[in-house]
Length: 474
Image (cartoon, rainbow, N blue to C red; front, side, top):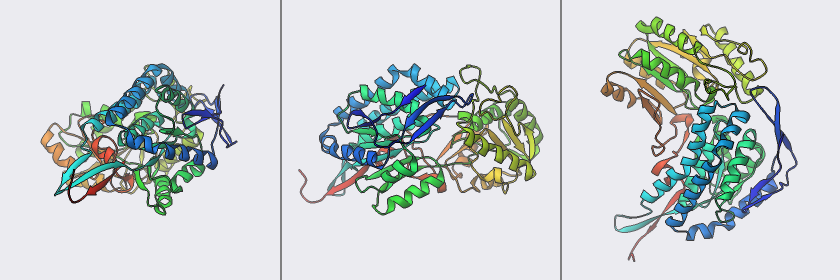
């Protein structure tokens, strides 16, 4: 059993002042994996003080020094990639192939920040004056359990590139993953205080980061409900806030789409990361005259999804993160049936032979209307809703009829037409004919999917403050 009883402050592993202990459960079988001792408000204060003390060093650092640090962080993460993958599989239930991608993604967060920084114009002329882009200060970083290491890599990478220091509060559900990543980051040998990591609850450590006057910015990824609370808490000190929140992403199959390609893609986009993805394409919009054919293809594709032990390379759908999440998804499945949607495949309960873990049957509902709860709420599980439409204009209207706006998908043989539709969708990212990966492209959402952007130059902007120098310029 893994016992994690230290946090990381000022370049050292230290015993937290907090005494609360949380269990770490293997979601594949419900067995106890370990325990983590959680930090408290005093630990948050110590971490913030260390980050604040390191700010002068960061202000004096050159881009070359920051680039070297980012490269060392990248290399250190990859050195222990095997252990990091195993932690994702056991602690989160992520299928091994996706876990391998996620570790690479975490490492690449540092390299992408390095590349962005090297191409960024930190000093520029605007009108007759000089404008300098300077780091905001101490950044509070709060990461979710569904992609903990990846978000630490991308957020911390950008903070360092901007010349900021950081205090990170990862999800306590990801403590083993965090510990391995932390040990990698420590081995990179950055100056003390540049980054600090405090395991702790959101309503304790996260709340302190959101209100403390020495925190200049919060970068949060998680639920819309929690994001709203962070924004309210940050208002008193006028913190800069970047929020990447929930989603209910539409996937529009236009009437000329190649269904043999688009339907498998729809299943992958809906069930990615065990269905626990804010960017999942969980609303599949289908031309009414093609509905029956699409239903048959979707049913066959969903029933071919391999659910089970995430160590098995053939498995693409593992368990949900814990029992609470499993029960939440079960309630939504039951609600879909009660509201009159057609259960095409899947349904309540666990797949046969997988009763010990938090597994969910790959579930698809047809006959869903935009007013149904399963068409509006972010379920965060492998549940897909099929909604039919008559015209392209109606498809766009249905796609945009949501409080969210994080991501969207469009499939069409006519690329110009797909682009025309994409331009009308209210979403931070729109994928055409595929699932594309571009870590320099801005990532974030419209409406209640968040505020601000991450990745690339738009993401770096969020960690910087412009200072104008007027008059004679040296």
